[in-house]
Image 1 (cartoon, rainbow, N blue to C red):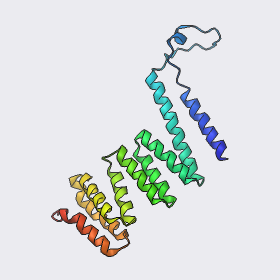
Image 2: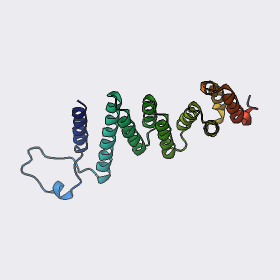
Image 3: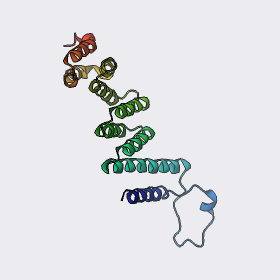
Image 4: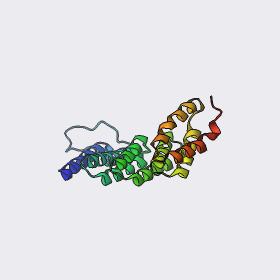
Length: 195
């Protein structure tokens, strides 16, 4: 069943990409007697064809990833979605790859996806929030402190007080109460004068 769906997706992607006519000036100027329907559309520029091929490849990767995720193959889903996210610079796809890894019980892979996300989109606040949450959940206090500080630095000044308040739930989820308190003090000390 999986093979049939993947083959159908491949044919759909190929058909979609082949709808863009080739940019061949000789083919456009030479009339074809075999063609019953005249082609009045100008040939697509090379950039458009390459873009269509990229989109078809990305579509196939996302489709393959989602099918794999829904059929119990999280490893394939993770790798396909992460590949598409990198190629497309897509925050939602990075987030989906992280979710697939977490759903499979693989926090290290989720953290690797977040790292790739941050390399691709270094100013992404969402990626930094995911990193902080994962590091706190994994009990990596020092790394979590750096990640939380980065979240606060990336948060616009007007939203910073609300972000600080929302960190309380993050600290509560950390297993060790003493470590959580120490982490909160370490991270929030520079912001103690915020009203």
